[in-house]
Each structure stands twice: as structure tokens, then as C-alpha cells.
Image (tube, rainbow, N blue to C red; front, side, top):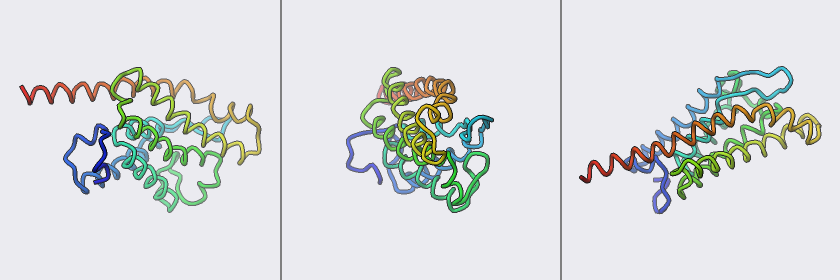
Length: 199
């Protein structure tokens, strides 16, 4: 099992431990990112569209924990690069690696792992800490995405922020609020169910 021997715990560690469980969760995570990638709103002034991927990456990463989330997001990226058309706008293939938005896809892998780790150490149990965890995950995605965007388009920081960060802040805030309610809520329900069984 991927999380065997670790004292840290994510939501999915509450499921029966087995290699099959790990593989199913990893595959479902990759699929979820691909599905949410199709929720796409192109913007005329930037090559980076608004998508649902960030929500899937951060919420799923927190639920799966660091190792499963990292492998699942790598699976999504790798299969997309070999041709599965499940990047934003049904894109797929190696040519995506040369697009200005490729850095965000790489950032998804790093962010999923970081958020997964933070969830394992308890950052997803309370609303305030979950919000902080999601901000950290978004910053990781923006970091990778912004650097690649600036290098690809040969632009400076001000222009890069205008094209690759500012247009997405409001949407990411909405996703953050949703995740900050869903994750602690799931832990609360889990606690209630556990106490009900023990009563």
C-alpha cells in the first residue's frame, strides 16, 4: 500500500488498505482531473483558459494524500502527453508541452503532492486551515504556470501576472471556499459515523 507505515492520514486512508484500492483511487483522480478540465472558459486576452482542473487537483489531492495524489496527477499529465485528449479543450499530445499554459499542468503535479502532504498532517480538518492549505496549493500552481508562461511568451512579471494570475483569482477564491467547507465537513461526518458505530 502506498501509505503503509505512515502515521499521517488522509480521507481515503479510511478505506480498506490494498494495492487495488490505491490503483482505483489513483485512476479515478486522473480521470476526475480530465473531466474537470473540460469545464473550460477561454479568455480572449490570454492563452490560459479558466478551467475546473484546479478544483479537482486540490480537492482530490487533499483527499488522496501526498503519494496517491502525486502519482494520479502524473498519470493524468503523462497520458495526456501521449495523446489522450483530456487536457483543457480536449487537447492532448506532446505539442501541449510547448503551449504557454503547460506550466500549470506541471504545477498540478507539485500542488497535488503538497496539498496531499498538508492534508495528511491535519490541515484539512478545520475550515481556516483548509483555506490556508488551498491558498498554498494555488500558489504552487501559479508559480509553475507563471514562470513557464513568461518564458514561453518572453514577457515580464507585470504582463505575466496580468495574463496568468489576475484573471483567475476570483474563480480560485470560489473553489477555495467550496473546498474549505467540503473537506472539514467530510471529516466531521466521518467522526459522527465512527462514534455511531462505537456507541
